[in-house]
Length: 370
Image (cartoon, rainbow, N blue to C red; front, top):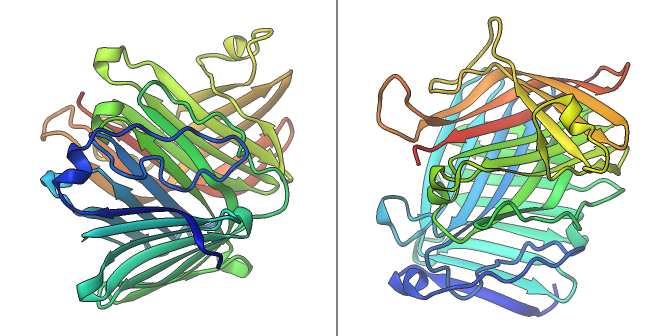
């Protein structure tokens, strides 16, 4: 690998959070995987999320590597590792590291390492070949070890998509779609799936950065990463906090045979609103509330989503149904309207009119009491 041209080295301590910080700008057409808060993070937060799902047996893995989240006031940098097996058993562990180091080379190869050097433990990721290859390595002996790898297919990248999601939050995707291969031991159990065969899997990577701590920047969030036949799509939808009126924001991309066919920044309430002349791409995002189905444990009781994409008279519709519960994490005190963070592996069917491609997706929804 070439010598680094940029380096961001955080050592846990008050200075990382007390120093005022401004995010570096988004650069269209680039990976934008290097930290936007490179020298200090102040009151902000930044996260890299790696996820993959097996399309047939619905096993999955999510690794979230963050700076600035500071749960329970901790100065260390958190990595969350979550696994789901075909029998629907799950595993979740938060790891905390005193160092977080990210470097970038001239070829836009990026490496991130969250480490505890005295203990010899780390979780790291590397993006190479201009974003075509990604490898994540877990080195937590006795807890979580192994690799998660992604390979981007040919076609459009979506790297020009505007990441703006309101005045507080930005979200981009260094790898919006790709095949995935997992060989990870978590809690003494192996989770394995690959890019081919009966355990064919796909995945994606999100990079988000925020001027505020995560829960103060949004009252609601929904992430969906999906693959069905020739289609792949990614949705990040948030609503601003209550004091900002819960304004909806969206960053979404729909690919067909490697070509970006729709990239709405607008959430529409109805088909008529979505097809309004001159209004641009739109997404109608509906929840499935009728009938029996798997739901979360909190105030959100949907059993899936109906996703309608619109561009220039074209329409694509996908229906999801929750098939396996990945996690239920409360975000507010107990009560009849308790809120939470819930993730599922969903079955998926849809496409353009007359199509019914089947696939799978991850859908993660979070409500905050703010």
